Length: 285
Image (cartoon, rainbow, N blue to C red; front, side, top):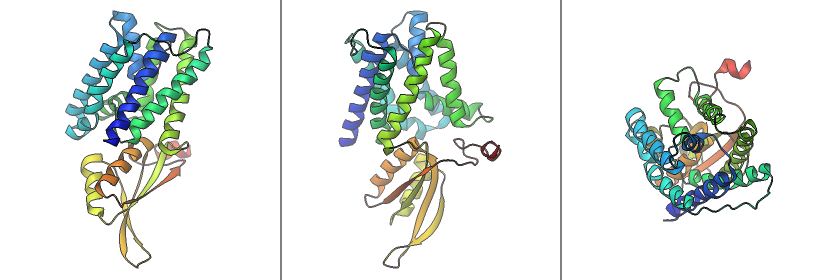
């Protein structure tokens, strides 16, 4: 109950940020929200309905391309969050005082949206937005790009088409919003700035944890052994992964084993074959 209540609060904050800060002040952002706002100007259908249809299409694509497990992770918020957005949009309320500098409004939005998103991610939920779309495209056609590069390409594309509706200065404000938003998410999740983390897991129920990582979360990992103070030899799971996936893994591992030991270590750089890592030649060159 606490988990779902936290997610609900996070979604309400997000919906408030979009409907009562972003939209009334004629700003735009990247991602599915920006896409919906641009389409609203083109086809004159409320962005909330466009958003709902888009995330449902992403949900269906995730099911068809990524499989049932991937769709299962996003189905709850794909159905619930757009409804909250529709309700919040009906308020027709501008939280920001008239005459406030645009850059201040950007910071306000980034803080509110980042905090709300951070609460959702911290509980291991995903909203099935542009990150899921990036995974779908990457699975189908993106073998030459890493997953972060694919996400960046989607955001850049949406910002470029927003130039047909908004000014260049407004698009620049979107970059300021994105920077603030990302920093606040990182702070909510980990209290600092970590994009990639090394995760260490030690558990007496290690087989259940490994099954969770293999079958549900699809997280790559390696194994070694440690000795506790009682002289008992225990398996240790080590993985390097993005902080969003780390938050989800932590939450689910604690559900499998309430006594699990989990340690996050900030990682400045890593390379390898996983989609979110850079290639070695990119890292050294």
